[in-house]
Length: 113
Image (cartoon, rainbow, N blue to C red; front, side, top):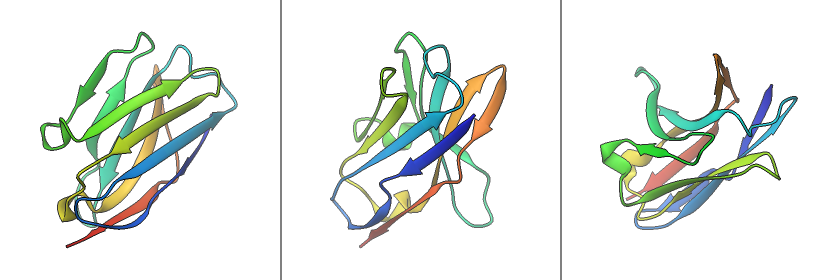
């Protein structure tokens, strides 16, 4: 499974970004997909997940600001990020999970104050 994340960049606080993660090598239809983020020297933390049936889970810090969604036909998962804060600055990683975890290379999100 290969995962290609895109959509990161530099944005001012209060702004929005939409991350995309395109999967190849396997269909995402039966997978739980997720977004995680990591800052230097810290562990990779959960941001949001979406199950194959559409159930979602969010970190408390992003609830009501971020929305995860999936398009099985396009084999892609998205993360809409609104009301961004400087503390959202991190490398964001896409995750594909069926028994095993597969990770993409990550995309940098930088939120300036």
